Every structure is written in structure tokens, then in C-alpha cells.
Amino acid sequence: MVPDPSPPTPPKGLSPKPPLDRPRRGWWHRLGGEGLLASLVIHGGLLLLFAAWVIVTITDEAKTDPETFATGSGGGSKGERPKAFEHRMQPRNAQNLARSSARITTKSATASVALPELPMTASPSLMAGLAGGGSSKGLGGGAGGGIGAGLGVGVGNSRNFVSVFGSKTATGGLLGEFWDIKLDRKGQPLVHRGVPRDYGYSAEAMVEYLDAIESVIRMKGDANRALAKYFKADTTLVSSTFVHPFMSAAEAPKAFGVEKEVRPVHWLAVYRGKAAAPFADQFRFVGGCDNVIVVLVNGKVVFDGSRRYTHHAPPSKYYTRWNPSTEPIPGALAGNIKTFNGTNVWGDWFSLRKGETVDLTIILGESGGVYACGLFLDWKGASWHRKGGQIPPAGIPPVFQVGPCPPDVQELIRAQSAPHGYVPFFDPEAVFRPVGFGTVPR
Image 1 (tube, one colour):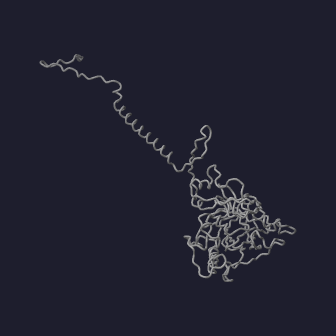
Image 2: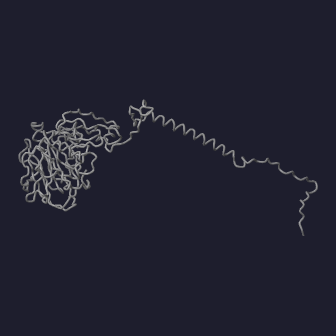
Image 3: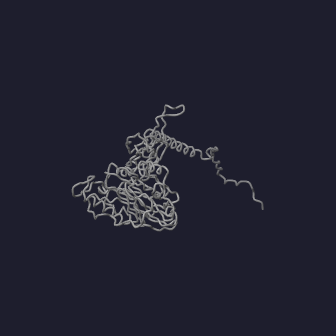
């Protein structure tokens, strides 16, 4: 049976309902156009507000940013408009740079033109220049100028001012730190009994100075622990050599940036680090100092070339009981050597294997007046220990080096030594290799 396809007939008395009349929707409405338009309007407004905020912020920073500077000169077609450059370099130790003095010297030992001291400033742009940023010449400048016969502490431009006491940026050598035994750790003068004598201090002050040196030795070179009660400079220097020709005792405080706080009396500079022997042999130190130089190898005193002038302290009071145990090289210069203002002292022999690492401590100091120091290296296998062999022309063994001495420092040492008749010898084959500061107390 086939179903009838015709629609059912409504019951009698009822009329069929007409179909609903719905309006036809366009494609824009079918896609949800009303919501999309509203969303676009809202997001567009937000983007306009954000763009306006960014423009206002950038404009304000360009007007008020304190970390920009102008050259004062232009370039190209807009030469009258100064160019602003971003200058955001941060020195690793801004306090050190602000406190450290800058001194311009000549590399010529005969220069007669003197330049005045340049004032220091704590300006961020200047400190960044001293740390080596930008293309400006900073305080270094050219090679002109000078301070007489080469008695200054250093040479170099603003990137890396280098002195015979060391450099702030060097990575090879021994780390040097500076103390004043007349001041407490806050920089206040210590009180000593007795009548002030030479250089303005009493015998009691001299005894305390000698005790401080003895304490460093007793603690095997740990100066930070031994000298914790005294004033310490913020600046640290790294040096590969320890030849400081005849100069004023004030030069060391200047090199460490504390010449305003420290009178050049009763200061100590302690250098420490680790170094490896260049070859296997028996070594010893040679030299001297006016006033203090003591060398410790692995915590043991192997050399004391100090000028034992105790300035009215008891004669029995001295910081080491060390005495030379080895004989000088026959024919070596042994008289009064003006470069370090004393006679040669010959240290104890100590044996090292090639590459063997040792802990080195060098204590330097001055009790007032003139300061001068020289530390040299001797070894048994050297040619001058053989029959018919000759020591270097200066009559003194080579300069002791922990890492190669930079050429500018070599030239500085030569220039400052020349007026005293000494020509230093830097042997590239006898250089101890710096291993780093390692566990050395900082």
C-alpha cells in the first residue's frame, strides 16, 4: 500500500495557520558583523591611547634623561646642532674610580714640563671614561707633559692608568691591598703615648707599626685578618713586578687613591696570589727596600730585604728574626743601590718543579720620607752561576715577574731607574705564571 502524499485535510470548522513571515538576513549579519565592529572599535581606541602614552613618555625622557651628554659640536649638514649620545656604562667599582687620583706623566726621563694635578669628580660620565668607555681621551690624553726626572707613579691614558704599584684592570700578577697603621678602620687617628719624633710619630707608634707587620707574617700573609682594625683603601691594584725606584713615600697612597686620607708614614701594601714556576730549579729572591719588603712562599719567610731602621723603637723590636742564609753571586753589585736605596740582600733557596704552584705574599711598607724598592730573581741553573758566566749588565739578577711585565711599565721602570745608574733586565724565560688569586684572602 502506497501512502498518500497529499497533506492531511484539517478538521471541519478549522482553517490552516499561515506560515511565519521571517525577514531574510544578509551575509554581514550572518557573519556576526555587529559584534566584530564593536570589538574593532574598542581595540582601536585602546591602541590609540597606548600610542599616545608611549610618545609622551619618550618625549619626556629625551628632555630629562640625565645619562646623556652632548658633544658640543655637530657634523654633516646639521653641524650646529649638538649630538646627544647615550652614556650608560657602569664602572665595576665606581667608588674606587672616584677616589683614585689621576696623574699625567711623561715616558721620557728628561722631560722638564710639569702638568698640574687634575681635579677629580664623581661624575658618572667621567668615571665611565676612566673605566675605558667611549672614544673620548678622558684624563690620559697624549704623550706630552711630564714631572721632571720620572719620579711619578705611573703612565697611561684614561682607559688604563698604570703605575709601578700596579693596575686596576690587569688580570695577571699579584693582588695588592693598602692599609694605614696610623688610622682605625673608620679612618680616625689612633692615639699613641710618647713624644712625637721623626715624621710626627712616637716610639709607641713605631712599635705598633712593627707589630702590625709581624701579625701579617704570623698569619702567613692573611693581611685582611691581621690588619682588620686599621684603615684600608678601597682600591686594589694588580702588579706583576716590584721594582719601585727612588721616590717620595707619598706615591703609594696616591697610587691606591687615598692620598687625601693617608699621610705618607706607616703605610703597608700587601700583595698576594698564586703563581707557577717557569721551570724546575732552586730559586731565591734578591734585592732590598727602604723601608719594608718581606716575601713569604707558602706562608714561610724566605726573604727580608728591609732597611731595619726602627725610628726610636727598642733595638730588639723587629718583625722578623730572618737572616740571609746564602752567599751572593761573585762579582754582583752589592753596594748602595740608589734605585732601591740600599744594599742587595740574598734570600733563602727554595726548590720548585716546573709548573708547581706556590702561594706568594709580598709585604711592602714605609715609615716615612723616601721610599724605594727592588725585588729580583736568581736561580742556580742561571748562566752567571757557571764558570765564566756573567750576570746581567746592571750587576743584578733579572726583575722578578709574575706574568710578563707590560711594555709601558718596563719603560716606566727604566726611565725612573736611569737617573740612578740602574738598567733593569726583564728575562722573558724566567717569568712565573699567574694562576689567579684562588683561595687567597680578599
